[in-house]
Amino acid sequence: MAGPRDWEAYEPRRPGMVRRVLPTLLAFAVIIGGLAYLGGDLRELLGTAPGSPRSAAATHRLYQETGPVGGRCGTLPEDLDADARTSLKALAGCLDRMWAATLEQAGIDYEPPEEVRLVDAPEEAECGIDDYDWAGIYCPGPRVVNVLVEGERAFSMMFTLAHEYAHHVQEVSGIADQRGSETFDEAWSRRLELQADCLAAATLRGVAPRRLEDLRLLAGRGSGADEGVEAGYRQSHGSGASSAEWMRRGQEGGTVGSCNTWAAPAERVS
Image (cartoon, rainbow, N blue to C red; front, side, top):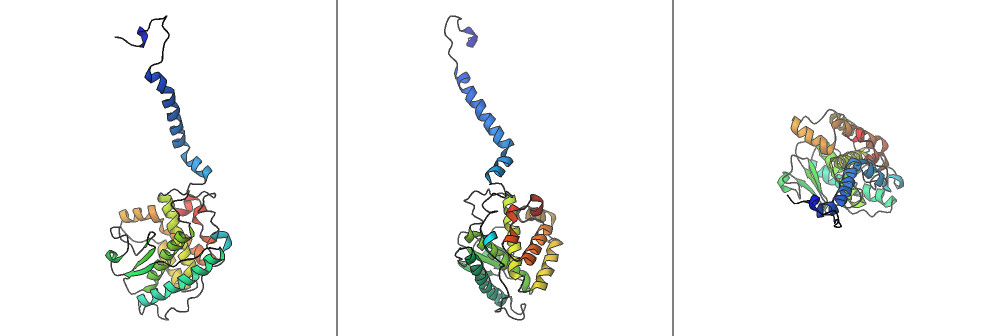
């Protein structure tokens, strides 16, 4: 069978296609393999790994240039549970004032959400209609806050509202900029969600501190959802224990800097 060995000794040999391409393919394979093996270290070096202290989200100027968030909300009704919608609408106005004052300290113009939508069913929300069960959801494109109004206890819905407002702040400030150097994955999502829990607690710490403490303790005991839903929720939002810990930090610290989940080690945002 004819092949490379049939070349006469006196004829100058010319490498075949495989021999010409093989060194390039091998070099390419080595590079790809190295990137796969060192991917985490490389992302850490570049500051794009979740939890890297050099990442854009971890070094945002809000952490250093702003003081305590919020304060008391004088427009809230005395009985929060008398009419949940009235309480939520009053809190939305307070949150706009709180965040406008806080972001101004860092030279960032705050823009309120385009709409705060209080819905009776997920189908009435701006987004997330096909998502699994949620109490609130933020739509970053149109910048719409959605809160599901159900039950008679207003404070849990108020915390949901403050959490979704925190997502709005992450968006308008650039912390949640997915077009930047950050890499979107479940670890990224947990840091985003746990930071929103922390910021919500920071804004509500002077509104109803005793109720906030009760809600934090409840979060630490878990949601009570079935195992499959609970596992999926933990992957994207973090565990109940992590949520309770970041709520504590927000309630006690009261600043954006105390809610820097992006620079926290992985075990604290699990």
